[in-house]
Image (cartoon, rainbow, N blue to C red; front, side, top):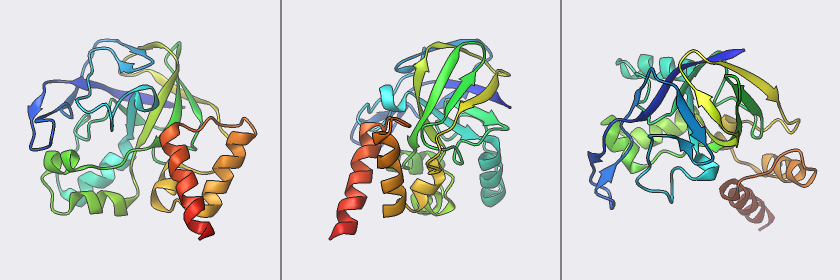
Length: 215
């Protein structure tokens, strides 16, 4: 059993050198309960819906253990929301979660692990660390995007229970780090069997890996 150690929503839009001109990566904790619907947390926002948010990336979760790793690597605090996460979680793995597993959060909210987070240039500018995207990639601690299976409220301190876990065994971090043909086949087979319902972005990546392996 894990718990939500922080719930984070956008604090303010910040100027950004990217094509949109602003970014909503500045997430900060709130002590108030927050409603979570199909498109994410009420009061939150994403500037680029092409790469963030929407039904398949409604909630971004990052684990305390992974944040502690980065605090040690960077020699600085990694407060909740710094990575743009909506939920900082403790006692449950986000990067180590099996793709398709479901979490009950609090009394009613149910979330499904959908895919890893892919670091971008906006994230790099936020962190101001040399070679940040490459370092984040190499560390293999991406955190997880989750989709909303059942809407509900979330607040700091809510318990998290893993209520189902597919048997294919492919984790968020495993796919993020390797994404090989064996994992791709396992995911497609699980999808065909109804064990998981791959989000379109992940399905496209899986099919690309298998196509490349067949060449």
